[in-house]
Length: 292
Ligand code: R5P
Image (tube, rainbow, N blue to C red; front, top):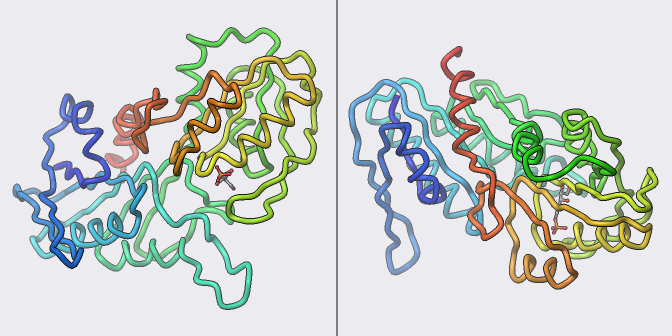
């Protein structure tokens, strides 16, 4: 199997090149912003495409579709995708009449181009893993990987694990189980894309250290409100962990300005607080692929 790195995964090149034979896409943009890609193809029946769809998701999706379809044209029999950050998963159903269910549409486009197997990390599949004929999806929960890292840096006395909303409770639960800690979540109210309110916490956090875990940090609004509530309720130190650190605009700086010292993410999206390498996850998940 050959590994094809697309532009959103170039930051993983070093760690993946230690283990795999890697091919890198050639990409450029025409003056009108249309995209060109070329695959320096090496003959193989199986290809694994690695792509992370952050910051400019539309371009990354087009690039991925071009790559899948081109591999198909070149005669590749099985095409797998490892997309640590899969874009457009948040719109998972029609909340208002007439809305596009972008999660499903993007997956269908990838499947229609020729993708058969997809591995992603902590995707926003809150309605369950989408069931599409012809596309098998595996959503890896990263909490057990965080656990391995956390045990070496965080003492466990007097800690609790909290999800900043009820969707994140499952992540908090998985991590708490591993660390053998108490777990809870915050009742969150989303008022708009950038505005949330943290209403209450379902467990006592007074004088406790908190591991606050979420799938992604985008504007930082969710974590900011959660942190403020935790502090109001008397929490000691707060460790923030997220799978995807998108940190749009100055979100990371806002979190630091609040006084949050410990913020950790995976490198699904490259950023200055990425400490968990998703290449490690890919190496383990290849076992799943081998069994297919
Ligand atoms: C929401 O369901 C997600 O799990 C995250 O809590 C959310 O996307 C984070 O976004 P933001 O950082 O903009 O509050």
